[in-house]
Image (cartoon, rainbow, N blue to C red):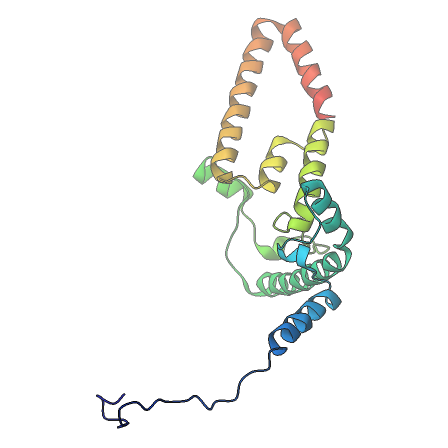
Length: 212
């Protein structure tokens, strides 16, 4: 500072900071206030990805998270309903204003698009927009995974539903491979029905039974 010309102190002198000091109790008090706000808002340390004193096992932490999750679930569902309302209104506007065609199948770009194209104005009058998954939330993810795999095991849902609702890194590629696999199996079954009708019928009955 002296070399820069801002001050010129004689040798042996010093500069003292006269800025008022923060009270030693202020930082702990702020921490306590933040913890109380989080607790009253339903966001304890555990739901923020932080540890809790005395929690040493994953099963213990999982149980505490489920116990502390009702308020967070309530807030999550409230936000989802608001998002659904916004999306519902958006689709209503598009239904009235959008004149572009959409289609549901494009394996054969010309034939399939012509057969399945539609306008949003052609949608049934009783449509509605909902949030159908909580897969991105750590509160719901484990439960969703278990429900999806149990439903698949019971034959309630198919392979495509599992791919769509599970966190696969490359869903499009997985869906393409599933489609190719299904097409190949259908061709093999058709060939088997032609060459060996009895075996093909038994295999077909087994597949139908698995999908029920």
